[in-house]
Amino acid sequence: MQFLPVAIITGATRGIGKEITKKLSSNGISCISVGASLHSISRIKQNDHLSFIKENQHHGALAIDLSQWPNSLDSSNIDTVDFSLDGNTMVSKQEHGDSVFSLIDIWNKQLKEKGLSHDVVYYTSLLINCAGITQENISIKESNEKITKIMNVNFLSAVTLCNKTIIRIIKEKRQIKNQLVGHDESISRMKTKIINISSALETSKYIIPGTSIYSASKSALSCYSKTLNEEIQKTGIKVTSLPINLIEGTDMIKDLSNSSGFENLEKYNLPTDTKENVANKVFQLYLK
Ligand SMILES: NC(=O)c1ccc[n+]([C@@H]2O[C@H](COP(=O)([O-])OP(=O)(O)OC[C@H]3O[C@@H](n4cnc5c(N)ncnc54)[C@H](OP(=O)(O)O)[C@@H]3O)[C@@H](O)[C@H]2O)c1
Image (tube, rainbow, N blue to C red; front, side, top):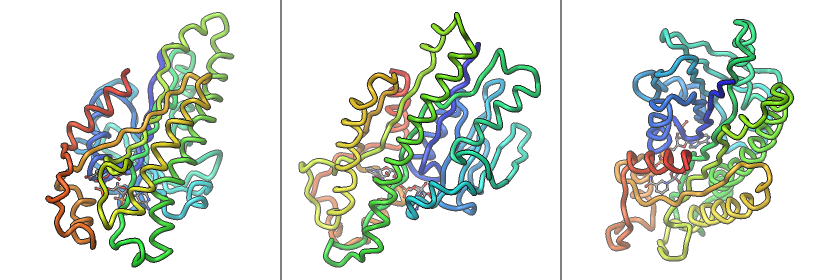
């Protein structure tokens, strides 16, 4: 049995998430990219975000506005794009099952129709929670609506996606085990990971006015990831959070520079990094 890994990456339309998607797809992993709207996922392009380098490699995208947690993630009506190697894209609404994983079911169904389902299977291998937004004001000037959106995108959606992914992987492993009675040692070849993208601001090492809610959302994500990893130890799924340094040139940093606490960003001496380096670190964490 050949196991074909599928990664789900939020925040994949731009910035760091786009770079991670490029890295994964150019290494043969099928990618499901998540962006906030149909408009933003329609900008995902082959030979830019996505490469097809392996037989049976697929890619897709989902439009989910994570700021509308929890409803947007419970919806069984998510705009979905299925990219094919010939450059054609198919846009549809998935109305059955859990829409976050429906493309994986569709791709497995296609294998079955080709008579290949005993030899090859797509499985949920990796979730990367990379979508993030930052604040524009110091806390007392920030609206409740914006505070809710920051927590919904940066923390609560990540929690829900972790939960959904863990439950999904447990079910997939059980199904494959039933299919492979007597050969289930090969299940150990299935790599299953969750990587949550945090920030150097998650610790109290850097205290920067204008990032109070943002840094709290990243601290929450980091603590959650550590404890979740212990909670699900028996499943074989590894959960890690990756705190990353300042990446100049990203839309997020342009937004922060306009926010009230960031007039003198230089004075905080924040360590910097590049998108390419972060994508390499994520890939190494996945392979570990
Ligand atoms: N940039 C840095 O220096 C830096 C430093 C430390 C940590 N980080 C973290 O790294 C991650 C990526 O940052 P970045 O600089 O690449 O950000 P970015 O360029 O601003 O991109 C943000 C990504 O998040 C998605 N997103 C935003 N709001 C969303 C929503 N409501 N629903 C669904 N998706 C939404 C965007 O999708 P759309 O295109 O659809 O809007 C986009 O793909 C974030 O978690 C950030 O906190 C960044």
